[in-house]
Length: 356
Image (cartoon, rainbow, N blue to C red; front, side, top):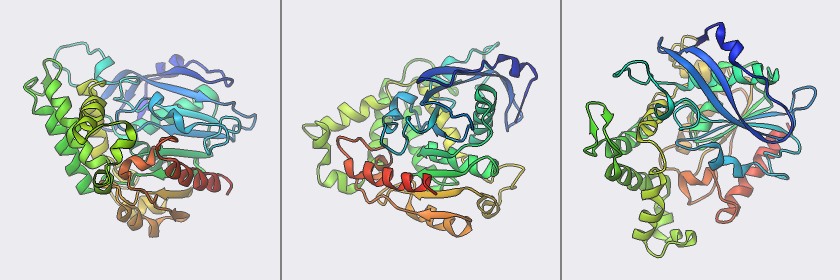
């Protein structure tokens, strides 16, 4: 990925003090596909203070459809992502409605398709942002859940000299075939709405968004979660109430074109799908020099423990610590109120990783 010379002039240096939300103007970026994304921008939020050595940096990329407000609850004093110790940067993934996305990207002519953006594209812009705004060339940790975990893996493989550690929480180095099938089901539920015509939404797909939410509900949480009616802990009065109040509304707050754009990023996720590794996943894993903490959910239905177990032998410094939780994929983004055990499990192991 390259950027036009003018892109550097668009980057404003950020302060390193209190928490803030800012925008990194990346300019015209040539994507991995060869297309140019004009006036690309990345929205970020920072916590804590960058030390003089720039050695206390934690990068925290967002997950599917999430914005920084959806994941910042993991940042807390006394926790693993402690802003009193670390300079934490949440990078909003392209397609989430804050950073460059179909919903906020004007195109000069009707019919110009929003370009597919890969993880490769995303992490290269993130690296430029850290360097141009704060002079950061190396990060102590890239921490991520789900699509954020896949970005962490990409950081370690693509920039092996720039990453000390990564925490891969409910993620993998490559989107597995069964994971792609799940995405196909959720995406086609959305596109089955009559509003989807000729490759675009002509109006808001209300029924499609509700259907997508219900499909997603069956994958994000485990069979045990439903068998034990754990949705009652979330205030639902019945299973139907839970599906309506939680899942029919989960994605309705997002633009449908944004949701499809991030699905494409997710499906094509592969740390070896680039000129550096030529599709050789074992080579890409073996090139990682960072300490790698793999924390799949032991009841996760699409990022499975076996995916990480197969990756582990090829890593130089890998540690596999499955999260014992019936919350399925949601175990990786735990609420301190409803999932204190999941939260404590993750915090303890990330703290230990940071101490190495």
